[in-house]
Image 1 (spheres, rainbow, N blue to C red):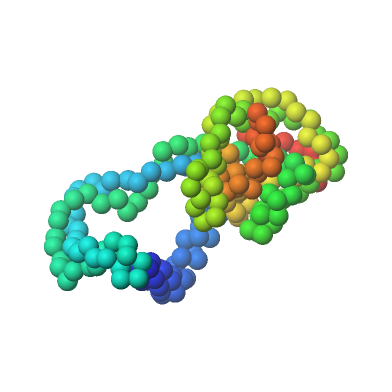
Image 2: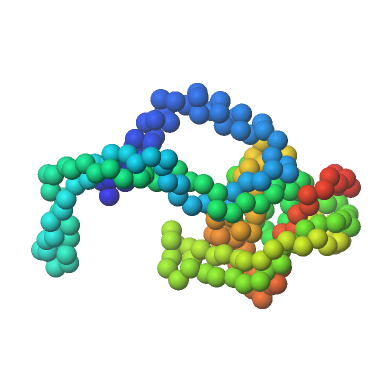
Length: 224
């Protein structure tokens, strides 16, 4: 608990001292065009190029006098070891950023989450027939153990091209907006931190063979 407390406090203090630079870099990232680029949907720890010196300690096993469980008490010992470190991440899976996503009107929880994050979107006033990419679900898994009160979900499959008529009321969420990277992160079906992962789409995925949110990589017109 103390380690987490010190980590959070240190992170917040760093952000306070460097607020202007963080804001500048964030604005630069938001301004970059991402449509058509490859961005990570899943990542893995990246090993450092060279070994570094890491400070390690030692612990003693003791019995908690109240719970009688075995606990580890840190000893006043510091030793140095040379090893590779893993403090960065690298993409393990990428996906091409589309022009827009199409969220069905009945996916109210999804639209509420987008609005809460400040994402901009419009709604179709009339039906629109369009060439879209549909994510075909081959299988899905749900974590047995809860994490932050959620049993994280994954889907496996791939996109295929199809022609669909989008009904009136469908939300059109373009990625060419200041929060375009967030749009991609939240709506990609394979995203490790997306809305599907955090169970927001569970009710729409029951018995489904397709991810309910469609996308297009082609420019289009025909909505307000």
